[in-house]
Length: 304
Image 1 (spheres, helix red, strand yellow):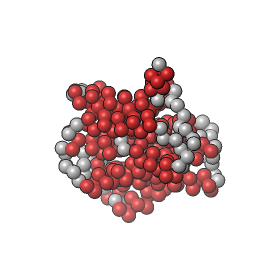
Image 2 (cartoon, rainbow, N blue to C red):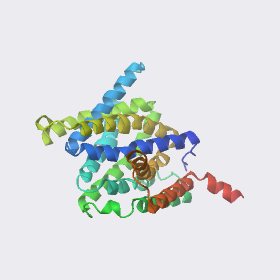
Image 3 (cartoon, helix red, strand yellow):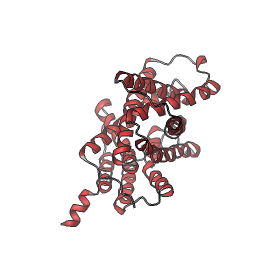
Image 4 (cartoon, rainbow, N blue to C red):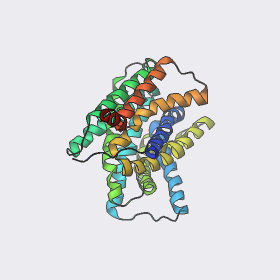
C-alpha cells in the first residue's frame, strides 16, 4: 500500500501560507460579489490569474506544453479545480454567510480521503490521519461558533452547493497528481488549468451574465478581484501544485482545515477584530488535528 509522505518544516510553512491566501479568498470574493454575479467573478478570477502566470512563465523563458494529452489534462483540472468549485462556492456565498461556506469547505480532506480510497484502494489511510481530520473539523466548528449560522439560516441548496465544491476539490487533488508524472512544473500546471478554465467560462458568462451590460464595479470590488486573482489564485496555485507533487494529495488537502483559522487571524490582525475564547479553543483543536495528521509527535510518544 502506498503511504503519503511525511511533512518537513518547509512543507508546513507553505501549507500555512496557502491557508492564508485561500482564507483571504472568502473575504475577497464576498466583496467582489457585491457588484458582480458569481460566474463573472469566476471568469475574472481565472483570466487575470492566467494572464499573470503567463507573463511570469514568459519572463522566465519557459515554453508551454503543446501536446494534446497535456491540454486535455489542463481542461479536466480546470473543470474540477476551478469552474465547478468556484461557481458553487460563489453562488453559495450569495445565499449564506462566508463563515458557513468556509466551514463546509473544510470538509475537503474528508472527500479527498473518500475519493482516494475509491480510485486508489491501495492508498494507506492511517488511524492518526482519520483522528486528525476529526479533530480539525471539530476545531473548525468550535472556532466559528454559532456566528456562521446566524446570517441567513440553514439554506439547504447553498450548503449542498458548497459541499459539491469540496467533492470537486477532492477529485481535483487526486487527478492533479498526474502532472508530476507528465513532467509539468507547478507554475506551468497552474497556468494551464487557469487558461483552460478561462476558455471554458467565456461562453458561460456571455450567455448567463452578459457582462458588457453590467455597471463597472467600485474600487473596493476591483481591488478585491485583483487580490483574488493574483494572490488567492495565481500565487496560491503555484504553491498548491508544488505541494501536490512533493507531499501528495491527502497531505495537501489538510490545508482546508487551516483556512478558517487563517481568516479569523487575518481579521484580528488587519481589521482589529478581537478573538474570543471559542476562537482560541478552535485553533487549539485544529493544531492538535494537524499534529495527529503529521504523526511525528505520536510516533515519538509511542517510542517513549
